[in-house]
Image (cartoon, rainbow, N blue to C red):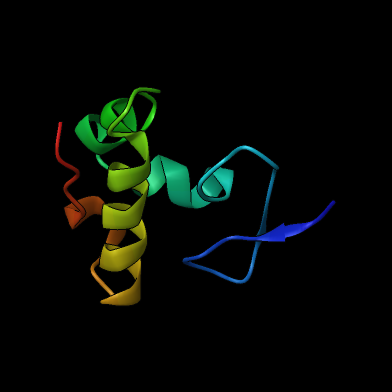
Amino acid sequence: MTLRCPSCPNTRRPGHYTCSSCWGHLSPTARRRLNIRDAAAFARLRQLHGAIAARTPLPLIEVSP
C-alpha cells in the first residue's frame, strides 16, 4: 500500500505520520511527542496535520504533550 506524505509529494509507510525525510525535519520534541501512543495521540496527530495544512515549516511545528 502506498500512502502520500501530508507535507510533500513523497510516499510514507503505513503507520507513519510522514515520510522519513519530513520526519527528520520535525523537532526532536515534536517527534518524541508524536511517538507517544496514548489517549491524546489522535489530538497530537490532528495538531500535526493542522500545522502542515497551515504551511508551518516542519522544524517550527509544535505538538502538545
